[in-house]
Image (cartoon, rainbow, N blue to C red; front, side, top):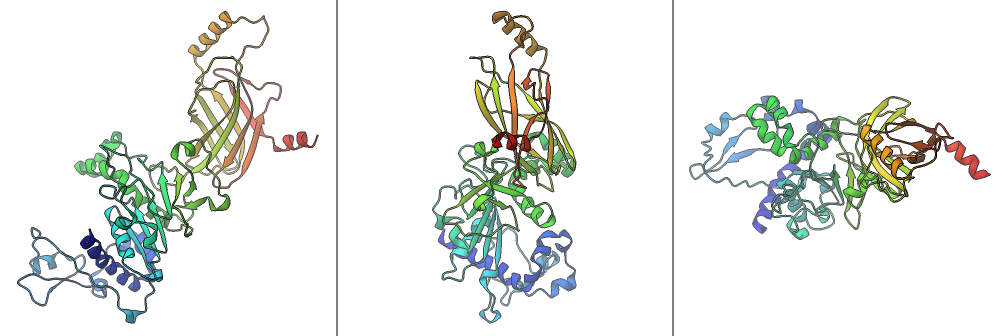
Length: 436
């Protein structure tokens, strides 16, 4: 492991040297695909040189970037082991290590950590970003044997494929940075399920099968690139204990720096303990979604009977509308209780002004109510029992705005299967009641 770490340090030093040459263009280098291929004239101006040494060459044969013919010219033998020896930067350049940002994907994330850990003293590497750091052989290891917050002045990590198979996961699950981001819980990513293999084959051919396998792991890279390409759609993540609590919408607070931006534009803050942040994303760029917490207080009028209804919700905003969004409650409705859940939107609908809440009932539900009426009859003309929904409280994660909605029909707050109720903003009404 020590020899691997030492070689890793040398390898990453080459990146730091190159960063000095293109220090003012790091965004463009990462964000623009057009710069991935340079002209031969541009390549000749690169200060980083690659030389191949074999037992038949003394002075070394130079290999030029993106010129495969130089491999043949230098008699490169792919069947032989390859050792890469890379020098560090020159002290005469006066390059500050704090300006260096190492970005490592998978195993490369730990390589970056090894590079940073071998630099002693107060002048550390400025930042290390781990893109789904590798899990096998690193999960559960001590900080000295993996990427850790001590490897740079600031360390952030994006975990996208921590789903375990036979006790192992492609990406590491444990926190390894000052800020650890877990998009969609970190276990798997939308659009990467095996059911999408046909879409990948249609797009990539037979290699689409490979694309499906590595889809979630590589999502970390695309999320980081997305943060560079879409400055107007930065993804916000929220500090939370676990994904189950987050899915209830109970972690959408930005007070005391409890939220942060995923990717290149993160707020850099050294913390005494790793902080885990969660967010939802779309299946493709731009990945940003808008998070909302909905808190609904239900009163189940059928005493002693728990029901598991299906609801949909439609939202009207100042910019756009969002219709028929499914709501999944973690538990059934029983008695008098407030339920909290998370809803995400792909688009910015503006300020929320109206909610339509529907109980997706069927004929089966009507039969259930008829059965209940037979067992527990009530007098003719008496209202049949159902759910009472008086208010809906909403918090928008991205704007931190809190809103209260009341039933448009104040005299009828009861909800039955196949019924829809409209709720409108009512903060003023509550203020007047409180003053009385």
